[in-house]
Amino acid sequence: MFAQPPTCDQAPLVLRLRRRAYRVAYRLLQLAAFAWPPRGQGAKAALVCDGQLLLVHHTYGPARWELPGGGVRRGEEPLAALRRELAEELGLSVADAIALAVIHGPGRNSRHRTHLYRVDVGSKHVQPDLVEIAEARWWDPGALPPRLGSMVGEALTLAGLAQPAGP
Image 1 (cartoon, rainbow, N blue to C red):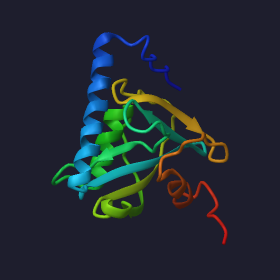
Image 2 (cartoon, one colour):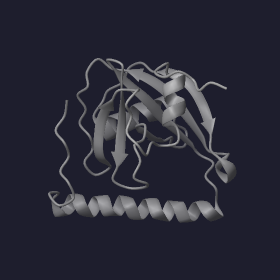
Image 3 (cartoon, one colour):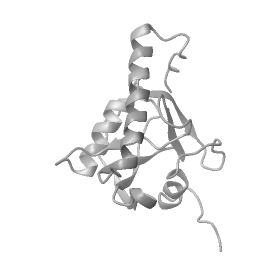
Image 4 (cartoon, one colour):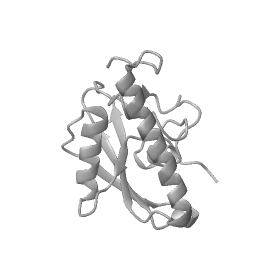
């Protein structure tokens, strides 16, 4: 699998400072979103290996388990952004991905679009970026942790890892 990242108490000063910078930047972006709702794009992956799903816990933002991925830069294709983000966050090189859906943000964030993909990998070995990722863990779809990000359930269903909720 992978070595667990050090906890904040064990992390060197530079790592702790960089993590703090990410948290401050995240808060500033949240505040800016009140005045200027985001209209950009994101790309996230339901990363699957041996029937398990990889979820990440970021060093910034709400304490939730999320799908790996990130923002799409101006002029960048969503799949290229996903490949870049997975390389940066997890040290993964991804060749193929299956487009699942484009999800619009809720409420005032409806102009923000997230491109959701399924990516099947042959190994569970990942190398999390210690600045951005506090923890990365493989989960059985039937035994997920509490406090999931908003797109995890939908990604499970679209990726064929969970049954859709009945009426």
